[in-house]
Length: 105
Image (cartoon, rainbow, N blue to C red; front, side, top):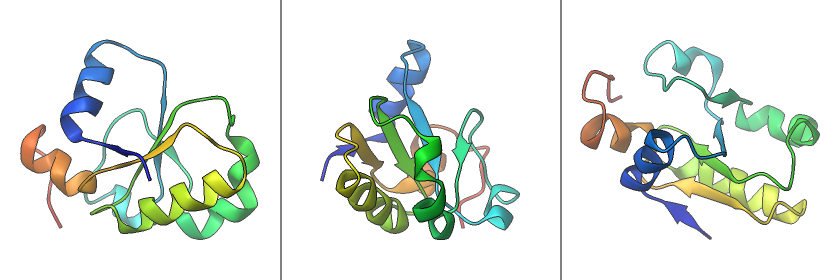
């Protein structure tokens, strides 16, 4: 499974690269800690909503620590999404290394 580090994600955002940051956390978690510009599809809804995504896009999945996002990548890969990766360490790693204003939980 392909992983994207928080440093790589920051570079992509800083360079305005084209990709989808897919947040698969539950809705209530967005209120705890959030990254601007995400596409939000909770993991439990992904099986019914994955067709909202373009399989040709680069997709970086994100959750709290990376576990659910890894499962999401496996699912997307099974549906033909070849450019899906998981954000290593999730939003907590992002908060720790890139944006300390975000809450780690």
